[in-house]
Each structure stands twice: as C-alpha cells, then as structure tokens.
Image (cartoon, rainbow over all chains, first blue to last red; front, side, top):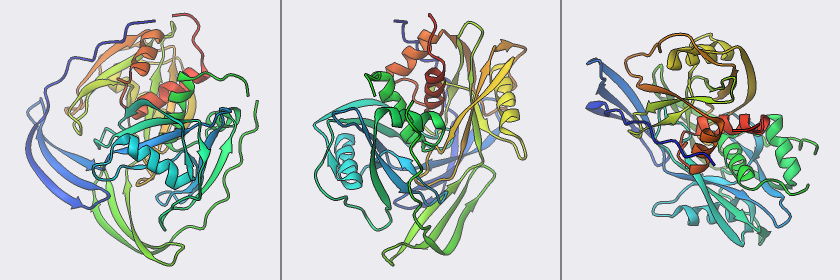
Length: 191
Length: 191
C-alpha cells in the first residue's frame, strides 16, 4: 500500500471585495463576487449554491443493483441512474439516503455503508454529494414520488451494471462515480 | 460479458409553458421554466447552463499520473485534481483537452484516448463533461495560467493515486470519476 499523498500546500484565499446576490430560491442560489486575485487584478467569480445531496448504491443480497429509469428535465432524456436527491433541512446524510431509496424505489436495506463524498462541480459551486451503499436491499412497498418525478425501477445483475458503465450510457455523473467507488471497494465475485 | 441493458422507455417530456431568463454571463446562465407535469399541475424548474468541459487523465510512460494542486474559490480549499476546464467557443473536446493539459501542467502527451463523458449535475443542469486520457505524458515548458488560476503540478505513482482516491481526499468529482474510469479500463501492472 502506498502512502496517501499529503494535501497540496494551501494557497491564500482570494480577497473578497463585494458579494452581489443575483438569485435566491429553495433550489439554487447564484451570486457574483468581486475578488482580488494574487496579481492584484480585480476579477469576477460566480458561485452557485445548492443544498447537499446524497446518492445511494442499492445492492441486493445476490450482488445485483437497483437502478431507476429517470426523466431529467434539463437535458430531456430518460436514462438509468441510482437513487439520489437533496437532503431536507436538518436531515442527516444517512436519513436522506434511506428516504431517497424508499421514495424513489420502494426498497429498504439491511445495512448501510459510507463511501467518499465529492464536489460535483467545484469550479463554480460548493455543492456536496454524500455517497452511501445500501446492502441487502429488499422491496417493501410502492414508490412515493412527487408529481415532478418520473421513475421506473429495475434490478440489474452486477455484470449488467458493469456493462452499462463500460458502454458509456451511465451518463449521470453521481451514479457513475458512486458505482465505481463501490465496485472498486467490492470486487466482483461471480456474475 | 453481460449484455448492455437497454435504455429505459422514454417518458414524455414536460410541456414548457414559459421560460424566464434570470441571469446570463459567459460563465453560466440561469433560467426558470414554468412546466406542466403529468399530473396536470404547473411546476417550476430551474436550469443552469454552463459550456461543455473536459477533464484529462495525464498518464506517464511509467503509469504515474500528473495531478494539480488547485485552489477552488467556491469552497476555498486547495486540493489535488486532474487538469480540467471549459471548452473555448468552437473548440473540439480533443483540442480543449490538449490545451488544458498544456496550460495547467506544462505537459503534452504522445497519445490520446476517449473515455465516457457525463452530466455532472443533471438534476438542475445540462452541463456535459468530456473525458480524455493523455498517455505517454512529458514536460515541455512552464504552465500558462491566467491570473485567477493557482496550480501546483505533481506526479504521483499509480499506487499513490489509488491511495488518494481510496482515502476520500480526491473530492473533485470530475477527477475522481475520470480516474476511476481509467483505472477500470487499465488495471494496474505493478506499483
């Protein structure tokens, strides 16, 4: 095992001269900051804020994975993803993961594991995604969708899930990253 | 090899009643749409648009990976990432990948490969990230940074890069996903 590389030496933060709120809503906030960069020049930096999210890798006893076929309004396509969503106010990542799995698939899990989280788009946003693995998943009831969600549930074998990843058709970054983190942690034992 | 699962049956798109531009800039665009959802209700949907980006996995002949220690203003931290950035107007993903590698690290590559791209945040944005692998990387000159970029260059062995991933400290989603896609395609041969 190699040593984990040290963090790079931290750069001094930019000096913030002014923060201009542009838009505020429960879904997203946009602001434009005027900052002083090390050269002494003034520059603009936009920052999009979105509440923390969680993505769930739902694994069944046989190693199969529960996917959802979901319509995504921004690009208009219906494609396979893993259950995910934003945390409710004051909700823990663990509680949010259980809730999203239950609502979007109708499934629950016997055991929960934590994987590393990530910044999905840290060039312009401090949005953070938590990652959880739901092991020993089993169906308990119907989905609980709100009227903007359009979701089909389907189980794929581990081999099918890997084929989906390798084909380039798992285009949701949250799902692809969470699945790859889990497959790296848990190498395949048979089909 | 398992068959690649078919795409899910496509849902009908929401009916767009009105699009309200909220903010426009070269960095990002925000709009709020009024849509008709299948229940017949009217809902709002925000859409953030950001030009396509590319992330590069720079690999040297010995399998080591070129990382950059980068300051990210939205969260204020300096951490390890792979070279990445938005494409210029009319720039191809291949050209953008070569440019970002050259500008951010001062390195070039003997061979380029394409990996699957992804939507980093498709709940609210149609932003797309291309992924390229730069193989046989070698240094050619100094970095070419603009005055808002703050970047240190460092090579890590494949084992160190894997340790960084597994430690949870590679928190940039673009970098973690690109690296995992490449490591999956190219299993490790020695340290």
